[in-house]
Amino acid sequence: MKKKIGILTSGGDCAGLNAVMRAVVHRSALLGWEVLGIEHGTAGLLEAPPRVKALKPEDFDGFMLRRGGTVLGTTNSRNPFKYPMPDGSVKDRSAELIAACKALGMDALIGIGGDGSFDILSRLAKQGDLNFVGIPKTIDNDLAMTDRSVGFDTAVAVATEALDRLQPTAASHDRVMILEVMGRDAGHIALAAGIAGGVDVILIPEIPYTIEAVARKIARVKDSGRNFALMIVSEAVKSPNGEKLEVVYHGGETRYGGIGDYLGPRIARETGFETRVTVLGHVQRGGSPTWNDRLLAQAFGVKAVDLIQEGRFGCMVAWQNRKVTAVPIEDAIRECRVVRPEGTMVHTARSLGISFGDEAE
Ligand code: F6P
Image (tube, rainbow, N blue to C red):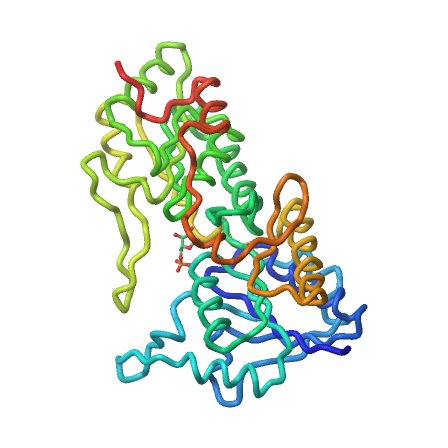
């Protein structure tokens, strides 16, 4: 039976979102189904008329596979349960949104998102009896139940390349270079890029540190005859006395930011090394996806359509044990999957002599 599938991207963008859509569109076309793209996440459904467009296979050629961002647009600040109204109030617009999905005649809705988006979308699905399937994307890689989310691999590749570029300039100037990367409450990007980029120190929110221990590591680097050091720090790392470092944006929204600049002068003072800080920011989210993200994106897109064909809803596609599978969405958002201090990658890093700033004297 011919079906109409709605698809939206929600939350922060990342590389690989268009590749996911491309897979959904092509797989659906083979089944003779229609795909309706919803613009700007759930917010597009709250406009009159709803901001939707038919997604056709001819519009999703190979170029889309390589293209960064999301051609549908996205939002991470317009929760339909607490929708910000022009007069400054907030309103529950969930019923309007569900009505819009029904009016559009959608048989199923695919949401490409992270934990925050899935929390909202699964609540909407329950409330409105919508057939929902989630596809995990987040550079933070912090969704439970899936080894990988779309966008993480590209973010790590960008951060690793940044370290590759910082290393020669650090060596030329006898400096400590600190690279601050994203990751919200999980240190996966810093850990992976730090190992891949051969840093001396990795600081992640999961492992408490002291400036003194970091300085001792850098002193050991100096004593070994090396004239520079590389450090990577995850944005959610707090100051040693537990202060959260944040940036307040116009409208009062806060995001992590500032730990690199906090650490820079302190490390310089403790080590005597000239220190410079690079904040990578949204560069980690843009650009063309890596081959790994393209593969994952397309395996996920195809699986989501397969699930709809099988009538399996309320689940998220996931990558586990070298296979694409499906898990209950509640299990995926129950907790943030942070770095395990006793896990393989932390052990690998420590065994390579990388410091987490927590070693005793
Ligand atoms: O969750 C993805 C992410 O890129 C985080 O790593 C980062 O803290 C946050 O989003 C930045 O959000 P925004 O795009 O609103 O600045």
